[in-house]
Structure formats: structure tokens, C-alpha cells
Image (tube, rainbow, N blue to C red):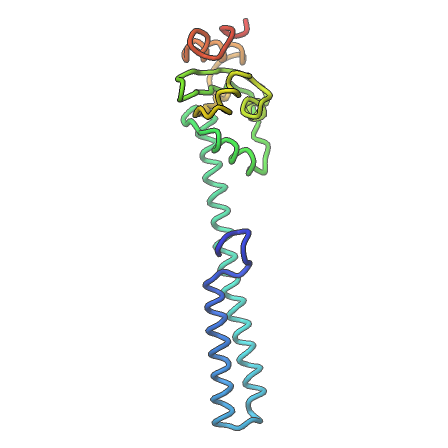
Length: 197
């Protein structure tokens, strides 16, 4: 298929359909020539039926390929999300928006997020019980104003998410303080405090 928003019939099916129509037309012409015009109608109907069946088979195959690509894309995004929330992987802001916008389920959880401005080598660490919504707010002008200004100016950011329950910390405050210290986000980053006490 050209694209999921394009024609519902893939190019390969168009070629198969055209070949079937031409083949069916040639078959009817040969039958008329050999058997006479009286045999042409039943054979013509049969030829058209075969073309319709072949077209249906090609359409089903194309639809299955589209569905498999969608399932594979969803698997890939789920794997990316799992690696992200386990602190194994960082993602770009565009990947974050794509993952958040394409998901059919609520991805929010309690945790700490780390935003790295790769252009300026500065970190911002924050916490939330609705982490996906909170990170989204920083890149849409409803969070840290300095982070948003640098993002709008064109600085490159990556995002890391850390799930509270998988880290052995009792509270979000503890985890956030540890991350602010580890990434030096207070002294050389965007954070205005060393965290909540």
C-alpha cells in the first residue's frame, strides 16, 4: 500500500486486477472466436467472477500486511516505552510526542523525569504522579519556562523516565533529590532547588 491514508488498493493489487481484467477479456474474445457468441456470456461471467475473487484475495493480503505493520509499530513503541520507564533508554522529544500521541492506553505513572538539553549540557529533574502529562507540559509551554524557551529556540533535548516503584525509594521526593544530585541539576542545570525535603 502506498500509505495508510492513500488508496485502499495497493499498487500490486492494481496490477493484478488489471492483468485479470485483460486476461478475462482475452479469454472471452478467444471463446467467442472458437465457440461462437452463445458461449461467451457464461464464460464471461465466470471470468469476471475469477477476477473478483483474485482481487479479493489480493485485497485481504494487503490488509493483512497493513495490520501486521501496525502491530509491529505498536510492539516497537511498547518496547521503547518499557525501556524508557526502566531508565534503560533516553528518547528525543519527537519520539516522546509520537509515543504519547499514538498510544491507546494511559501511559502515566509515578516517577521522576530527567530532561537533558544536549545543546547546553544542562539537566532538569522533576517528579510527578502523572509523569507523561508533566513531561508533555514542559515542551508545550506549561512547565519550566527556561526549558521551554531553550526547546523553542531549537536546543536538542532527550528524556529519561524513572519509575518510582522499580527503584527502591520510599517517596518521589527521595528519588528526585538523588537524581538532582546525580545529574548536578541544581548547580549547573535548570533546577532552582535541591529537591523537596
